[in-house]
Image 1 (cartoon, helix red, strand yellow):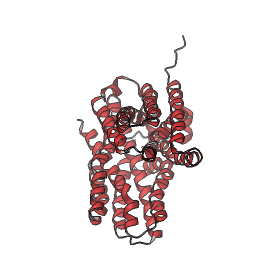
Image 2 (spheres, rainbow, N blue to C red):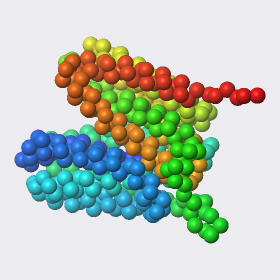
Image 3 (cartoon, rainbow, N blue to C red):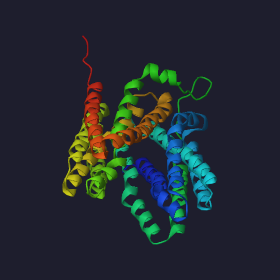
Image 4 (cartoon, helix red, strand yellow):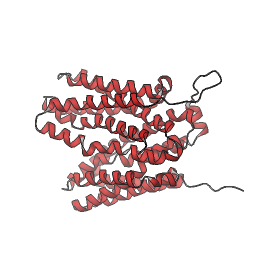
Length: 380
């Protein structure tokens, strides 16, 4: 494996290990005597801050430099996670720390994606996004079950120590990366485009709409547990095969990313995920759930890195930091929209029916995305 891709893979693993450890934050805080509503708020403000910070991530990268932003933001993540370990039980400081953690996490991810889009050669870019994004899946096999084990056995100190260790690993990896060589003007100043340039000279609207619709389908993973439990099924029957399918595709199928335009892969792989959601909505056994999870993961294994690749494939170098910000913002915004829909629709029609309607919408959305990225005919 290319050393740069390996470093980015490890950075992706480390930063998602940092965030995924806190998947168990709510039960930990409740075990410390906090109310369920307070614990839920402590979880949600992190993701709200992450979403709101996305548009500013590109601006920070441009002002501070890509590699320096990665170093400083990961140092911020480490310091804040250490502060959280000594937070006490007062909700207000906990919320403040969690908001700052979301901001620093968001900026690091934007900077890391911008670094990849700027540093990886075009002939390796597709496969690099496929391999690097495996790093975001690995914590589901390692960090998440280990965090569960620690909390169930009362090892809360070790649980709280995991995020700082992961963040410090990000710092170490970022320091070892080579600085990005950026284009400059005649006076030696870095040339960065504006958001106006991005929307005027690139297919930014199509890119962001595609990411938003794909993100809605991807966000369905949040409600798989509620849906499965509502039908008496085991959520892990979907979750584990999903992670396995995504990992297998990104590793063994990565060469396809270099042979085909990523815009051609985005729609069909998204459609595969959507069809699996429809079949999942009719599942009556854990076996069917597992097969759907595996195939869904294979679709996601292509769709997610294909959409991230837009930042390098469709956007010139001076605009890639801003493109990375908006791509992540559109994906994150979908994670805000879906709970609103499921909350209202689930209350009136039940979780199962609301989930099924949403799955059918995803099929229609995936067909639209496939049509939107269709190759244009060349006029004579």
